[in-house]
Image 1 (cartoon, one colour):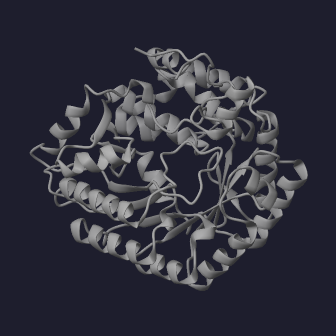
Image 2 (tube, helix red, strand yellow):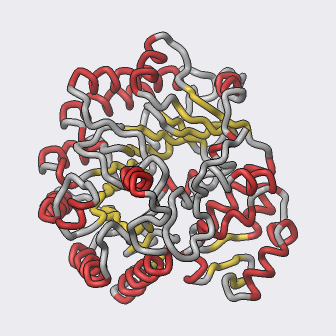
Image 3 (cartoon, helix red, strand yellow):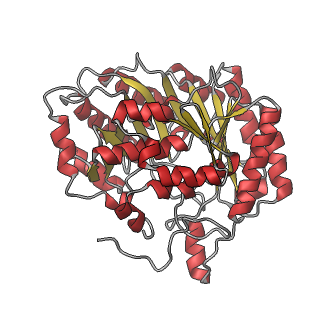
Length: 446
């Protein structure tokens, strides 16, 4: 049963920023994931033969120096070294359980992603011990990419050297903004000088795929500040720039303040302003040689700078999700781990699967999932879907494609369909058109 919230999420995103998630990160919606399908995960792992899809690992580090006011991830700011050690040991036991299963045994990950929270919160020694043991359990020697998210203020040259030595190929810096005032008022732990220091260390150590994250529409953001952020990014010259538009999910500090003040509109920039700012950034980056490769990314050299985690996952790869609240995807089954760190560790200790909810998807749902996720790249190829799923996207969704073409949001180029820049900037609010009816209705509420 879907419970209606008194405040509806803002999926149309026409004007003011309202509370709720509009970013589409998966399909079907999380509200359909359930306890009944948890058994499907264990049944799959016991299957007589290993899976054939490319395999990846997502490792969740739920620790931070501070919790940002806009953060909606599972993070902890009050854990000591003993807590960290217990958590790391639990995740390694979880990985070992997966590696010994029939479905995973003998397979090697094509990508590894350390997300958070703050992966760089861990010490150099903890990171070395963790990754050495992970590799012993499931070898990384076929990994095409190892991504590591960092909070700039947690990085030293020594720690970055350790990160590079255990195999990280894509370093992602959570910069968000270059104004110390805006960083402070939004609850960020780092300051701008730490960004430049960490970046210089990383370049000096030979990292050749550095991503910088920005957020358009943070608390107190202005036109002047945003333009300054763009120029500072260009000054850094990272290999990839990722820009998110600020949203205010229900479990954030900003929403808590909204409730206390009785506000329905979030105290951040409206959607037209945020899209304007992202477009300004994309245009400026294009002027200095970058190419826009998705609704959120601009890349300096697309031929050499890849994002394997995203591209593999959006094309149906398997992914083991390790750690508290982590999301995984195996054999067409979505799952999420327990969302309390003590419950998660206790489950591992008792040798019980730490899965909180799951969903066994249908062939049609897997087709729609890949279509909507790949539309976020700004281009889809109809032959890909015909060859993989035996479905013509133009026949299946003719009314949507015709409508988008009539208003200039979509252009056909041979076997590909390309989104206009305007459509790309608001793609997450457009994707619900492709959802099955039951999922469209459900996503109106959280």
